[in-house]
Amino acid sequence: MNVALNLLLHLVDEGFDHQAWHGTTLLGSLRGVTATQAARRPSPNRHNIWELAVHAAYWKYAVRRRLTGEKRGSFACAGSNWFVRPSEDVNRERAWRADVRLLIDEHRRLREAIAVLTPRDLKQPIAGKPYSAAYLIRGIAAHDLYHAGQIQLLKKLEVRS
Image 1 (cartoon, rainbow, N blue to C red):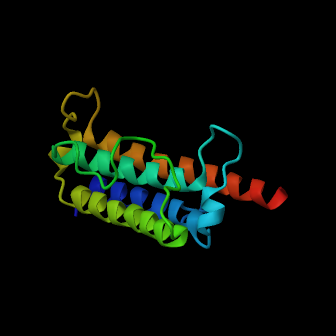
Image 2: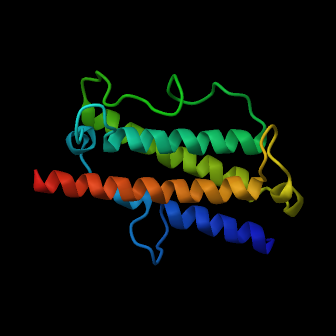
């Protein structure tokens, strides 16, 4: 495997679910969170943990789509970027687990799309964008960590209230 690709895969994994020196990963930040905790809004018009998780899943999908040239419209939820959660589903725990599973599945699909890229692919600009595939991949790893930190803060707020 090429060194640059291997490094990018490690970055993506360390931000999502592999052990890393920086602390909690995105998936790690969700470990043990119940639907009730995930749905708690820190204040009106602010995102909750559940919405952050689905937002992260959406951007894994969007990055994969940009890397592969796949057309828009195949994400599991209607809309884009932010998705109001929880829905009116009768079983919140089941719906929460399904959305965490969506995040895990989108990560796996993204990782599979990255793993087949060539060194040339990594340097190529993304269609219609002023940046390369490697830049986009580094960005999605950072995105996971950014939201992992937000989730950790939201969990701390819950403990205090």
